[in-house]
Amino acid sequence: MRVHVVPSSVGAYAGLDGPFVIATSADLGDVGYLDNRLRGQVVERPAEVAALREQWEATLAEALTLNQSTELMMEVAKAWT
Image (cartoon, rainbow, N blue to C red; front, side, top):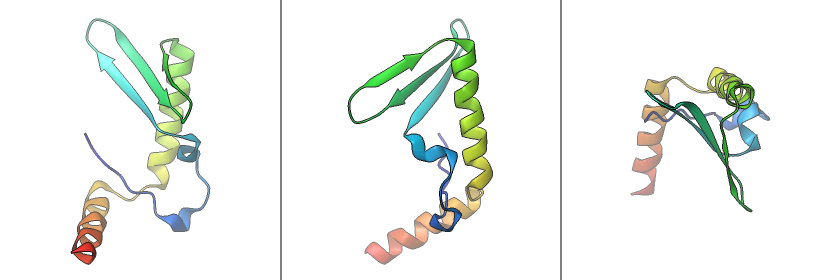
């Protein structure tokens, strides 16, 4: 698992719609899981999974790199101790 931080200076971006996961399995293909405060939803239709991938790519484009995200999280963790 990788964590990328989207800085607050970005403002509104695609990932604010809510959390989701895209999973790839050797025998089942790709599936998505969306979560909100009322329920979770599994998506299996290729077009819906593709829409989630587009949302992920748009979010990742706004995020810090993996190294930058890690450094920022370490700095914040130090400030909490």
